[in-house]
Image (cartoon, rainbow, N blue to C red):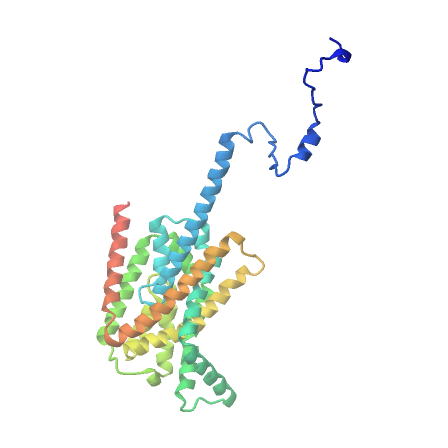
Length: 337
């Protein structure tokens, strides 16, 4: 049968439209991802990509949680006399946290900034009054009988030994103890506990902050410089020195916190100078914020707790904790040899 003699009953064939026309007439059709290689669209490659993305997200969450936990530890142990540096060295070691971020300079700076802000918030009125008194004494070239001016200068004097030793031996103390046995830290925890116990035993605990004199400020400042050794505890050694000087427990703790403000601020600024121009990775912003926030909140809680606690009780609880922690570190080292 020729085309000219087709039967009238035979269905008429519709001409096939081109691919371009058909594509144009299909509305709301999602685009098809084209594979660049024979293996890129295989189920195995797609699963590997999803698995790697999930693993990366999980690691990011874990890092934020680790940063928050370490910020919590920093905030509590910076002010409670149990040594923050010892805890920040020991805990990542025991928990197997070896992410470079945990030991980074940026994270260390943010932790200290968190505790600094806690001090500024809690002692804001005291610090403003002391700063104004210090400026007034410089303007008048006289301290006179003003207890605020004298206290401001005592705080200034007390921070000098630690500032000088910290600048001279920058990084030596933390680096040395991070790279050496935990037995060093255990020994210093026990030594610090013994010093605090002797201060409790020998201190008269009758003097207040207004009774402090220059020799007292120098002695407490020298004691603060010893806190550069991880395990000694800055708050522990300065409270001990205050007790040896005859201060009440609360007065010794208050002076310890007030003198910590300029030294922590100075140390933070000193370390932060290394970050200038280096920048911070975007992926580190959330862990940094978590560590800062937890250090701030925990620091505020620790300051309020310790001042209230020492109004009525001794430091025996912290002395006992330090001895137990030191013994636990020794046992850990011996059992893992």
